[in-house]
Length: 389
Image (tube, rainbow, N blue to C red; front, side):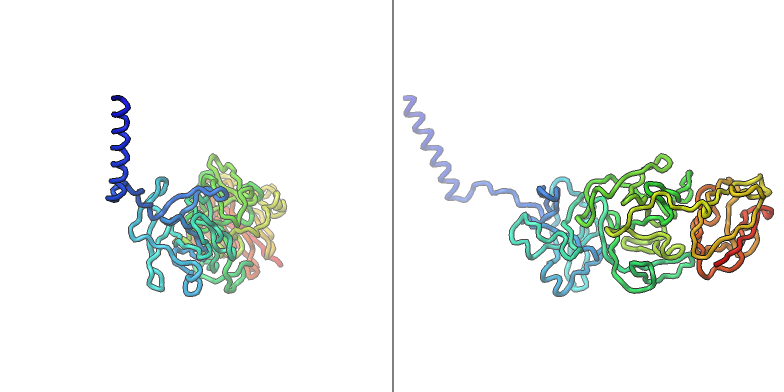
């Protein structure tokens, strides 16, 4: 009897399976999400489409517009997900869409338009990373990005000028580093290796040039992770690249802007890329460094002399640092000897009017023969600056 029961159960099981197959009622695998995450042995987490084909970023797209058009789009088709569904670990708020100039819709991730590479013949391949130095595998965990665009510097007078990679006037697409959302990163030309010489202890100038820090996870293949580090700046962390502390410019209005390369004059706040040289190990000449304090509200004192309000002699083309520690007595470089904030001489000057921090003055080639330093509030705190060649 037991054997007969077992036989009947087997027959029923076989009949059930056969019936399901014939009627097509077997459950099908769930439909794949339109954007998926795949773990690659080389690149870690990468973005793919529903079929598992790798998605890519294009370096010229820093402003969020698609620049791969025409014949480029035949090799690098744009990716668009009409009904966006995401794998776990991806946030819907990071995705968007744009209408390209050719009329096509394209999905974006953190503002970067997404593409597929036609030479990826099979799902899971990553044959496009590094192509032309401009194509990078799409990843959710880049700490910084590399872009290529025209530098448009804006000086202290608000005048915009196209600059080349040498920070001279000219038209040229330049590679440079941004954060993961296309905001330009800079370094201060007077900083030293792992030494921020710009930021004030109270962060009063941080809105103009804010220190940049993010957790270092992954970087595009144009960079090496070993080039990055972290320093402490008055209790806050700041990321470095090749020893240079990294900053963002408060005057950049939108992602992709790089106005800071021209402020206050071109070359004071350069961009960074793989060709950036290592930051120097304390190269400021002692003759180019002034420590400024005050005697009440009567005079400024400089570390190189016991005289009050001494005359200074500066040379055109040379950069000077004024380490100011005179709370309540903002230190201005001016074209006319006067109190207040009018007549400030801002050409080549960073942090004009600072009372606690570093003022940097790169003396322009067309600087007048005579300038002045003045307290904003007290007329007795003043001295002359002789400018020579």
